[in-house]
Length: 247
Image (cartoon, rainbow, N blue to C red; front, top):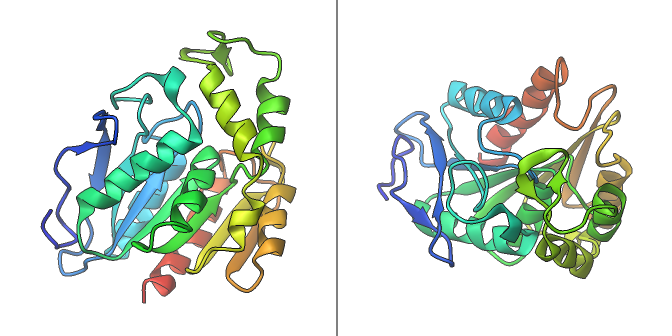
């Protein structure tokens, strides 16, 4: 991949050989930084919050790459095989493809857990942003999907059938709190206090495990997807922080 901030990566395939769909938003061509943006479970790369972040970053001259994890959106693969562990591999394939450039990652919900677990093993990430991250994964799958059997739609979405692979992976991980202590890069955690899917306490738990490295921003009245006024408040919290973190 060319080094300029205006260049989009060529085709990206994960370790299973599945194509990862992307949306590239260019920045100032003289800047090399790139922000990779990942979504949560049952979601996709085209979401109001992620599109708003890309626009805010572009206004600062910073390029972004929104990705759809395998099995989601236009990416190849089966949703029923989607897990945090598999998506950590997807993110690694993206980092392989973007070349030698400073890369930060922004992940929402389950994508926040993906970013944290990638960051503690991959020195290519120079900054990390976790948005309403799923932290206590075993608790999350029990609370949100405990009544589902394999094949039933998650959150009423027929194209997102629940699979035992997801349940097993979330239960095996258990929690990402211990991983938080291993983060060695600048780290921003943003959570809406009115989050109805992932309680804000989960981000507080992360921050308390890594108070020297992480910065916690709690947004009163903001829900899990940063809808309404939460959209501009998210951009105002994240974009200037990334500008500073990237120097």
